[in-house]
Amino acid sequence: MPAPVLEEDSVDLTPMIDVVFLLLIFFMVTMRIVQEETEILVPLPSKAESSEPPKIPPQNVRIEIDAFGQVTADGLPRDNPNARNMPELTSHLLQQGQFGAKSEVKIIINIKPNGEARHKYTMYVLNALTKANKELEKMGTPPEKLLTQILFE
Image 1 (cartoon, helix red, strand yellow):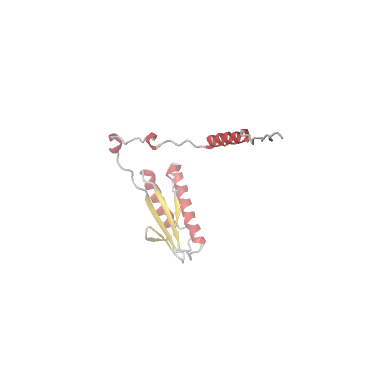
Image 2: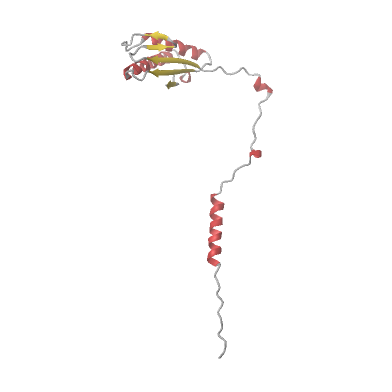
């Protein structure tokens, strides 16, 4: 009897190579190219820039509202708690706005209501701020100089 012929097992590598190329293309397309730190150029300040006067830090106007509605601006009591118009606070804010408009100082309004204060007192302060801004607009203050930066603490 003749010896049986053994067939060799062979693996078709074509699908595996296709998958490898697809993965390679996928990673190449989704890869982000990052610049090395040595390639980033940082301009150094020149001597002319260092001779400029330093910028003036912003001026903070701190307005506090206690639990009973008493409003203090920069540590001084202003207006009766039940005065909706708050003329003293409006006048104070107007003075600060005029100072900021004449100089290059930025005015930041910090409003700190007490946790137990009613919301209406905060609204009274915001109304006074709105009135001061309207008066500043009538005086010809540019919009970027108005009292618009308000922070609540």
